[in-house]
Length: 507
Image 1 (tube, helix red, strand yellow):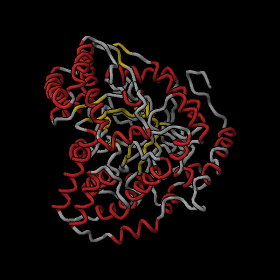
Image 2 (image 1 turned 90 degrees about the horizontal axis):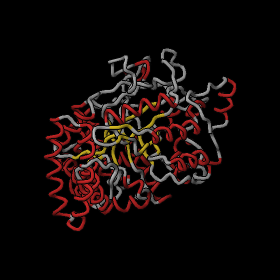
Image 3 (image 1 turned 45 degrees about the vertical axis):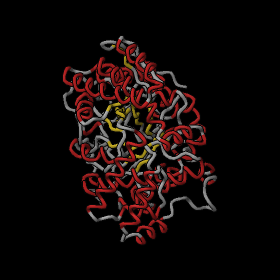
Image 4 (image 1 turned 90 degrees about the vertical axis):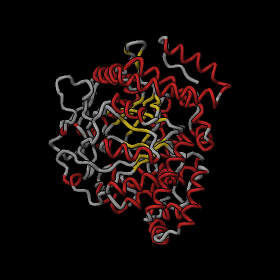
């Protein structure tokens, strides 16, 4: 592994050879069914057409299946997609909220995105980081720069969980990713009463080979995210030039299969909404979840549904061909929660604060806050500008601080959980899927959510947030005493230790 503070420059010839060697055809073909992939576009279109006039009675039967935490079929999902009746839509939204509560309780997980470089060998038509965008300020962070980013994120803001984002380029290859994850994990920052650190690093990166993913698994990767962007193959091939790595639709489509074969059993799916019809993309996400469940017994740990946002010097992002309205966005979030009821759902700061408030109750479980996506932006003390267009992939819609978001959530009765215990206790993959489907995971997480929320309040909260947070904690502790009396004494002991300054206690 490279040992460096500054990323090594890669000669142009070496970069070209690196690109040529990326795709491993054998690691695609082994998963195909007689040469066919699991996305059946004709079947998707047929299901959407056949369910264009949903019956109210059938819709209600489908909702009961969602409440039983069972994955819906394509026909059932297509039926929900086409519901227009306002009363039925309201029932769908109420059921989606109930499914979320049954599986995840009232917890919301927060995280921060951390972009470590914007070099990329691809040329995606909608992306500010595309290779042909000459107006982008290119940069890859060295280890010292990464430490300074983490000192802000973990020591000043209070984040415990990141999604670390990497471009596809030899300067940010698997060795760089592995070293950055170790660097992030090593940073400890003194806070008011304890120590701040990042306890889970999820990774959003390009598709990798099984061998590379095994390297990341050994380092201790969290969830591995690869978004298909669009499941509609003709659109995908039109937007991703065929002479680039990303131009290979199947290499990307089977990225999660390779991750699971490498024992990375928490994977995150996503589609970039606005590239093609959102109805097709929701069906594609469902097909992907069903395929993973059937082949590996584990569905996606998370599903993301970002809408395309404006990007510097990127005309297609300014005027997406299939723009998704706010109403359709709420509908698709509701349908995803009902179709894949066990999965975590991520609503990102691409969306405005107002829309996130409206969408969060429909089943979302994770959101980012205090987000900056410019390269090196967290530690940049010289700029007061949160948005730095020529240093970031797209523009954000919600730039509120983590504290503001936490206070608003607490006022709404939602507790912000900084817990990462389940991952370190082995509650991942098949084990966590079983716990989620039965609602048992929420019991463990209720205890850990309160402890980690108290930890954050004591280390980072201002007086107003502290008052709101303490009121919420009192209610949560009363619920724990009533619902889980067998754990209450042990829980109270851990809570008091946290008050005294102990950190990272969990069940």
